[in-house]
Length: 404
Picture 1 (spheres, rainbow, N blue to C red):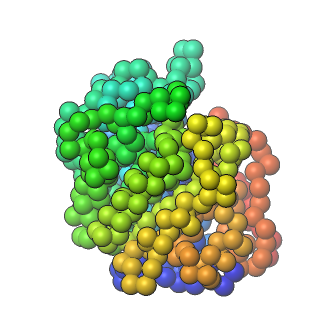
Picture 2: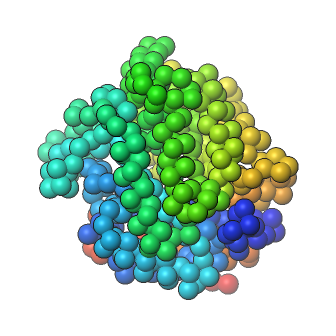
């Protein structure tokens, strides 16, 4: 695994010990919506083992009625001060850590307790309900809310991100990963208003007719303006990572193959033109029988949005990022093995690789790669990811390292 373990520097600004990245994972354990001792230990342990870069669990930039109500937020200075203890611990262990900026858009429910307490609104590009969802803490376990409010002033929402990213910088994060996949807010802007295309029951999320909807340039505008704001806060685009997944179907976000190719060809070229440090391309959705993790089980890609046999968006779009003289590094994610990742790095097709769920069960990923030890698997069932749990440390900080 020599290629995976080679050091790399992001645009001359951010030296990484190796090319392995701990991906962002919601764990539903921030009991007051900010990290505590459990999170400090969790991230520091993985940094101490030598991972090149950590991306923290998705952190909401505004009050959000998420189905996992103990997800963190970055809204007040107290949140930044709590995360500062995490980043300090990671840095003391020789690691680097990015902040994942998350806005759920329509993928939430306005009756969740935090929304009722804070008077929160469910904002989206258009007033269109998302299919799916399951809010286990609400009576009847309803799906995503019907009460979706169209964003009247997108720059105002961009300012919400700005405020949160400023706090992240104060908290000591080394950079920001913008979450623009998974059917969340930036992703919602990318999808057109072609509702029920091909007989689909899936609801497209953007039917705007202003400068944030319609053409591919307009649909990408929100994401690109967010990149500009994050670049401004962090002193340049080098410390910006944008996470996208062209083939995604999670949270009612699947789209046609033709639209997907048009949208992501334009978006990725625009990101590289902006000289972002990292473009993180996922491949969720290419396996018609794949799931979104062992908690949710296996849920197939919608039949009305087929892909060509053997299609891989990382191989399709990767050359738009990774070419001689490119200002951006290419990261990939979703169900890679160390062997496949090492081969792709060695062949010059990837710069960085994200492992996510394996970091739950393996606090010692780097040690295992170095010593040829297979990753441990989840043998504790579905409650590992989000609970319930007796304490936040349960199924979080109690996984053993391999014996060397």
